[in-house]
Amino acid sequence: MRKQSMMAVKISSLLIFAVLVGCDAANNAEEALNQELDKLAQVGNIAGDSALAISDQVKREGKEFELTTAQEAGAAEGLGIDHAVGNIELIAVPGNEIKVKTTVWFNETFFKNDNIRTQVTEQAATSFTLNDGTLELRTHPREDSSKSLWDWSQKQFGDSGFMIDYVIEVPEDLHHIRIKNDVGKIRLNELKGAFELQLGAGEIWLGKTEITGNSKIVSEAGSVKLDLEQIDKDSTLTATTSAGSITATFAPSMKYTLDTQTELGQITGASRGQSDVNGGGAKISLTTSVGSIKVNPQTAHDS
Image 1 (tube, one colour):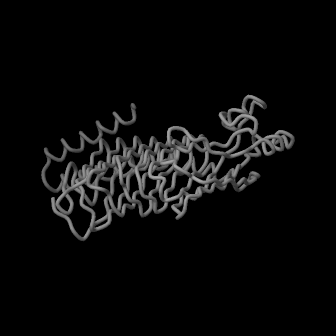
Image 2 (cartoon, one colour):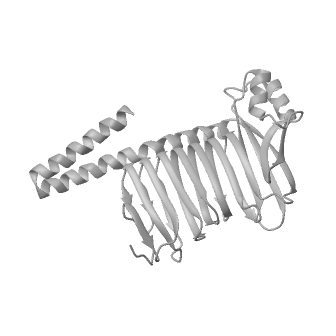
Image 3 (tube, helix red, strand yellow):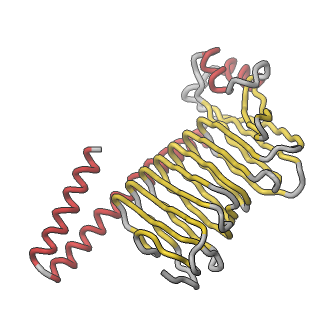
């Protein structure tokens, strides 16, 4: 908080200096300001990248095992995941079957005891629980599907130094996706629906996505990357980072009303505040506390 306040003072000083000394100095001050903002915008990205780098190191140096599970989605309309550490990737597929590949990665710095690792491996299972129309995914000890494998391991052995990755094939009819991940990546590929995504540190990426309901994306530390194909006129999308950048690419045919706001950071490719694209439509809000916002250029635009 103190660093943010000091940066605000520095920015204010630069602006006052520019007004007092004239045009050329103003240009120099603006350039200096942009450089400071660029540095500041990287803070959240660096934090997210650092978390991902640690997980990559665990994968390089540690040991892993895999589980697979599959079941019919049935009448379920959504998927819910509450996760601690690891990457989560969703891929849209036809049909009604949902498939999950679970990979558990052990950090040998913590899990040096082969006996404990063997017990965790033997106990691990991944399954779904249907709750109010939502399939809730969890990796858990075999005897208790209500408890996460992390909680069980911590209680049994005083250690839970492992990560869990998911690659999930999601039926197209599952239109409501809710994911909370403390550390890692959230990646959605060619999905269509309403999304509630919450990340502590890492990266959120949506590729060729269609928004068909009110959607919310929140990242505490790390980048958010959006590649949207469409958004329904009655839908909304809000993407927010506390520390980290937002990069957005929208299909040229999309009709939406864009609102961009940042406390400390640059906005490029779009006006600060509200603007209508292709006549306006569904509301899309991109907001950062500390971090840049970049909207890739489109072929059709009117403000």
